Length: 194
Length: 194
DNA sequence: GCGCACAAACCGACTGGCCGGTACGGCTGG
DNA sequence: CCAGCCGTACCGGCCAGTCGGTTTGTGCGC
Image (cartoon, rainbow over all chains, first blue to last red; front, side, top):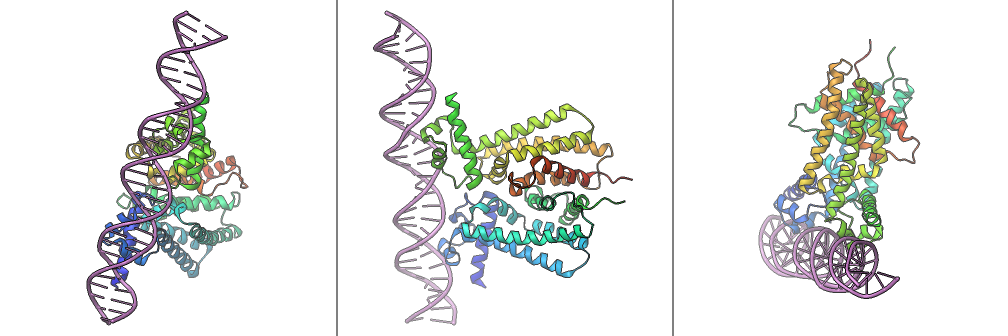
């Protein structure tokens, strides 16, 4: 238990500093000082600074993948599942706002094999989401006059942008924003009534 | 004439390298080599590496501000102006895709006063855009059941995300994408008919 | 045309500092 | 007493920025 405490506090400090200062401008010394440990302790649990960064990505990707699969497994009509997925990913992204900041800003700082892995896992998520949209289109519920790529980018952009404008101390709660953004998205991609 | 050529080629090389490798991982030496000049020449035209980065921001902000004002000055109904602004900013952002990549990824690398200035100028742009949306709401054309902040973030997110997915060599032309995204956005924020 | 003076443009070796990573010694709980 | 855990001093490399010097351009008197 105590052993993981060191690793955990280092990871937490790294996340905070990467999110506020950026990866490149944060030194390992700063991280261990913020975590209240020493370099020796840190390098006992992590092989490199890059490991710290990747751990952030790994945690986020695992969580989102798991949640997506849980929701899909729960079943329901395509639009209901799609709505649930959208709301959930926005809420999760708000819970992981600092992770999101680091995620999109520091992807290019990962070493080559790791960046490849992150890209690969993102693609899997993307494809699963795309399958939902495709199904909705096949059922005639979603419009087909706009390329699916554009429809999907249109949604992911909202998630992506959250860390640039949303503040937990602002007027909107995460649930409100999640529902509002989902509503805007679904309204734009649903076929017109009557 | 020859004098500006050095500055221009340095800026172009810096833009390319910052966009592909990131600001922190690009050395001044790399930039000047790519530009085919020497460090001495570069430091004759720029005071610091930070200057190169800021020049990219300055150019982008100036261009977008100018275009926004031209379109607003041209006049028309609120929704027409809003549509024109949206299409234009997407098209412009596609023309400046590398700049966009650097813009959102490296903002935190700017020195404090410059980051302040960039934030300030972005805020001005944001406010002008918000005024258009507010006017549309006052005229009853745009929905008011979602906070204006969310509506606006919903649009800016698309612009922001372009550099992460759009490729000029892909199937969609910039004009198509601009119209498609604008259409999705306006559809989601317009009050329902009938 | 032609030397001349002077400034602007440019060169590139060098430096001072920082930073990721390591070597190694000591501590401590089982 | 040993094996994992951690502290600390240090190293090698890199990199932004500098600085004395050289070249190139330019106006001017003659």
